[in-house]
Image (cartoon, helix red, strand yellow):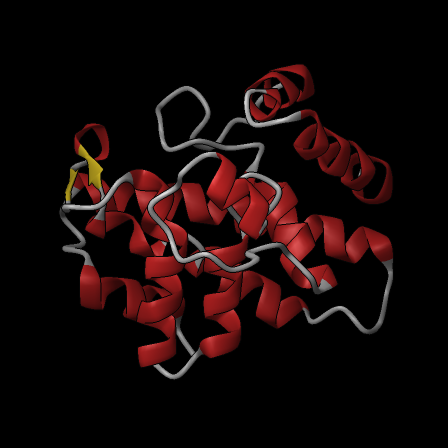
Length: 180
């Protein structure tokens, strides 16, 4: 499986959205693989982490995010479940779960209902160690010039996540202890 070939089915390689997606995904994949290697757990699938980290945001082109050249008709929060649908169609349902489960530190049905999010009402929480590592690594980078390839400070990440609930920060802090 070649993540770049899959991305190129949906993104023009000359587009701004392709640039932001690929640079962001490369940074997330690099950090996720570094974390996985540091854990020295032989059960962790490094190949899967690299592939899934490269594809975790594939659904952004379907969202309305003009600053990264995305002009879809869905809110940005939808890119996770939309990515899952794309990768399921491509024959990679396990990779698709990473797309769906990487938003914040995961979303529960309760989160979706409480925040009235326009996404399917089902738990979208990272379960496998690979999903958790990718979700964690993703928090360090954004699709903007400042933090596209440079890591955000931990306190900035915690402040961003805190807007969505103390429980999200608690999950991040747990991962911080496990993965750093």
